[in-house]
Length: 287
Image (cartoon, rainbow, N blue to C red):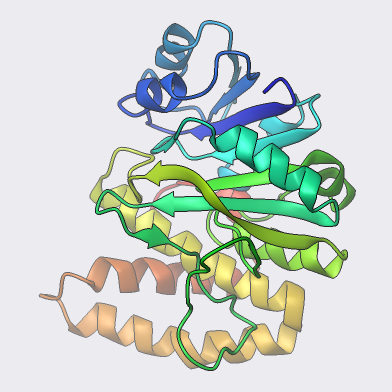
């Protein structure tokens, strides 16, 4: 397991880090990037894993840029980006290393991600693919088009060759973007059967109404950025003009709907992109 480094990006994750870190094999190098958490995530991480390297970011860098800061410290052949609300099962890292040896053409690998209900989370369709029928989880090792960010196993040479995560994306769609770029660079993505990670889902940061609004904001901004980057400015503007007016109207008119904050945040993020504002400069700023 000395061949694998584990990178965790933490933001208000103090309640989750002890169990996440406890499941990582003792011989694995661990890097925890604390994104200027208001809670004591950094101290909790250091106490739970004294040999971990804790990188204290001076400000909230965002998920992808925070992961880049963690992977900059990695010297092993492989790395895994692990959510704070995810826990490795015994043998998972050994199984992923074995898969990397079996499939040298692959740059990224996905374990089986299990929910608390024991169902498997098998990613989603990418925005630019059009499947005929539902996404079906594989029964064995299989090439795939998407590896989720909750447990993303990386061949570091391939990760570095494509420049890591997009530094312009603060939150959301950084996983879609890196999967698209990894495939464009000629590297396969492989889903590995029989190796498992348990994932709470949506629990990496302590929830709040404000944080939920900002998550929706960055969903809106990042979706347009992804469209612009991979399909062109015209496609991004068509998507924006097709979705933004409806989101704005629903947020304004449906005041009793519990989805109103999500519509409002997503519309605000799209408006920020259309105005030329950068997600990293906005971060989790003032509404």
